[in-house]
Amino acid sequence: MLSLRSIWLTGVFAFAALASAPRTQAAVSEYTIDPARTVVSFEVRNLAGIASQRGKFNGATGSVALDATEQSGRIDIVIDARTLAAGNGAVEKFMRGESLLDVEEYPEITFRAVRVVFRDGEPQRIDGELTLRGVTKALTLTVTDYGCKRGRADVDPQRCKMDAVASFKRSEFGMTRYLTFTSDEVKLAIRTEGEMPVAAPLAAATKRD
Image (tube, rainbow, N blue to C red):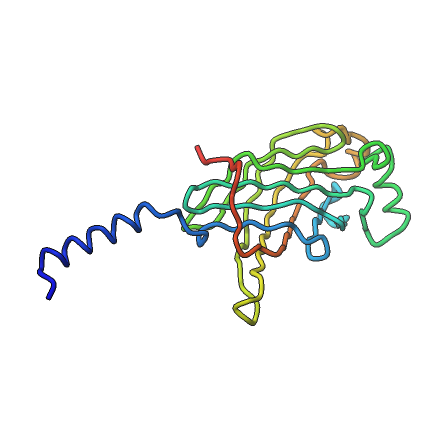
């Protein structure tokens, strides 16, 4: 029969082993963005404030890696500016032209996180850099929805999604024409979704200050 001292020592050693074991992936989510389920949309209002011009980009790629335990994250999003859709061929041609996005010269729009702020284990704010028309400026995304869920069976891969919004001034990226007709402020919304591998290591993460 084991003595009380033996039981106590066994418990101590077991606790020490658990404490020194590698951290599990429960608080880590890392996924490659699924272009078919990812949408980047925008809205610009006219100066009268009555009507808005809305559009979206298809074909966004990249990756998201978040670690709630370490309060760190890595987010890279690449948008194909040539996929702009605005519901009207003439408007799309104009917005893709040299006066605005100039997609022939600058076919990519990118966002890269430099800091992720968590609250209650979920991302709340993402401070990063937006590169548009060859100009890079700071941009903060506010996360409005985030979550990961496994499929119908335990063997199904886990899927994660994240919705975030932001706003910026187009004039800061060289789009200064027609400011007397259309607002300088652009509202941006990003919805990403992707499949998370069974074991998702989080490497080269950017830690919270």
